[in-house]
Length: 547
Image 1: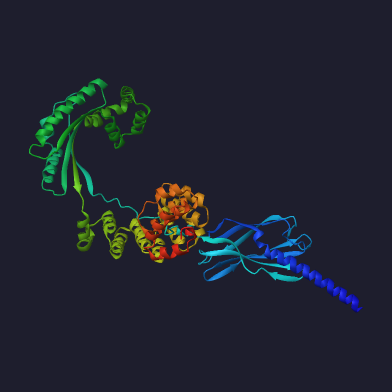
Image 2: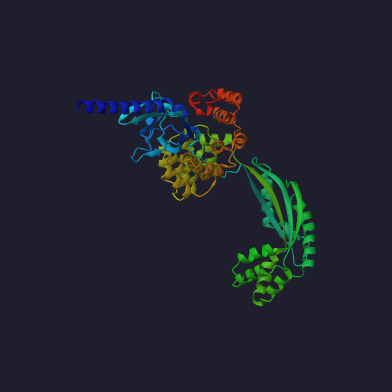
């Protein structure tokens, strides 16, 4: 019995010795393993790190009775993250693991980690142990798999795209001073009574008043002559041309010693536009029929014939409408110079009530101080219930990072306004509520700002190609980021023309990716004038071959 026990112990010891030798051989031959990672440098995409690790086991490496336990670990400053363990087994192991034959094999496994701050400088390593016949043998050191992790997408600017609602304030307002003289049928002679009538006197008075008006300047005067659309076209064209000449002489008499600016003249011929306007504004019973005739026929002769055929209405037209079209108009163009920026500022402080809505919006746009802007916008809201001022108040708060105050103002605005919807999306974007922001941007429609904002979400969610398409041609910082992330480095370089430290940092990344070490170092130095970028550059794996 003792002899049998001794034989058994010897057999067990021999087996253990064989297992130990095989395990040690696997450990000693670790350099024979071909381990590759895709991507070679880990990348953070939408807050997650994913990679495929392929292990190439050479022939004869794997002991048939061995089980290999591999634990991927991402080590970074301040901690480590342990990934899902994967297990390989020899061909004589009957467990449900990944089988590796003695002849060798290439096996790919996926690793996944949730990003936490600090992983931008990290290493993906494998902690390995082998088990043979119940005995455990730990590999003496970690096996490095890859460097990590690239966070370039986090350079995307997430403040959102938006702007103030533009005012319609006119710095120079065009005005006209106008009068006209009437002619008798088939005549181009100017009657003296026409030059003495009340309309002409008002015209003269208005021109005289312009002389003392510092804000108004006469630009020029135009004489426009017409003929009523009855009779032949040739006759009426000649009549209109003669009226052009006689009216120009009459203007000289009417405006003697008055400023008219340069005088130009024009002959229109038959005044169908004036005819339609007078008919439209009349109380004629058949005016809709007349307007329909004008829309149906473009030939003047056909128009006149069809209208003359309406005998009951033509008599009224001949007595009430056509005589008003035998005319020449005097039109003096004037430019009114509105309040300057300095005058607006003075009125805001001393007489704000004289300013209309658009003047208030312009004064607020000119104001440099936040509180001054808000005060003026508040006045426009209180006095005119100005939606533009309400929106611009929210924009002012957003520009100063006061998202809650902006949201409170927007809650009182028109909720169906695409501008308001986009601004609400910007707030959601800043707060990290990406799905809510995306829904709002979609609801706001596809204008320039929402398109850029959708692209920001695309970048944050790892949809780089979609972002690059949306941002193409915007000449924005995020367009450069999208081109870097999609490998379009020449486009990124052409777009990245700014001089700020952030632009220099993007240039450093572009140069580093193109292998231009000296240029990358120079840009890093310039970008590092901003402390936050200096700190980032020290950890950024974009520069792993530059340091």
